[in-house]
Image (cartoon, rainbow, N blue to C red; front, side, top):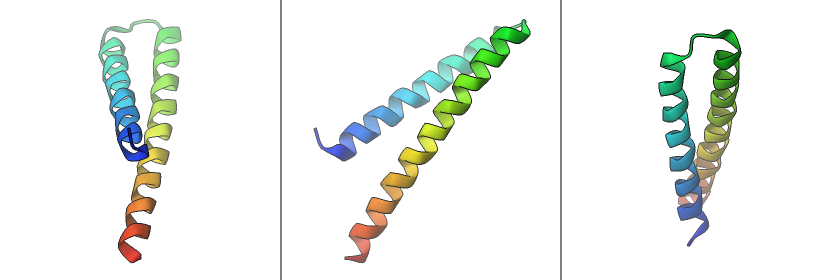
Amino acid sequence: MSQRDANLLWLKDMLDHLRACQQQLQWAEDADTVVVLTESMMRDLDCCRRLCESLHRRCVMQHAS
């Protein structure tokens, strides 16, 4: 599996986890659960952002050469 394929699979897994957290958040009623879910979602979003930035940089560098 190439690095790109591994990154895309990781991105898919993180997005699936975000979806699952969002569904749990819809039913969450206590503040502690909301805090745990939203913190997890923010970490996942940050990882997604960094991964997308890395994929973007690689694409730009390959296109420039």
